Image (cartoon, rainbow, N blue to C red; front, side):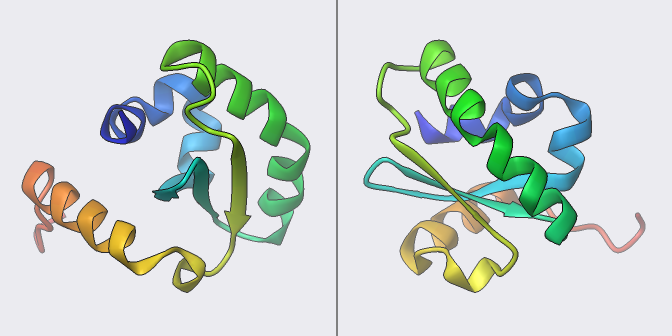
Amino acid sequence: MRWKLWAKWEEVVGPTISKNAEPVGFQRGVLYVWVRNSTWMQQMSFMGNHIRDTINQKFEKNFVKYIKFTLDRREVPTSDQHEFRQMIQKIAPENDND
């Protein structure tokens, strides 16, 4: 379920938010979302409940119980972050030509 959320993140939150915030982890109902800077952190804190409700409506009731916004990717549980990175590498490998 969480991989579907990652893949459809822009559809869920819109293009502007998806350029400034991205899901980086999920553990026990907590969605970890990295945000670009402190301005976006404040903006996202006001939108957190709406984003959670939209996710739960589109995917599964009570899939996300809480959203934790972070400026520091190191705050994300490491096991989930590692799995996410592996999945992203398979879908969109890094390319030095970009």
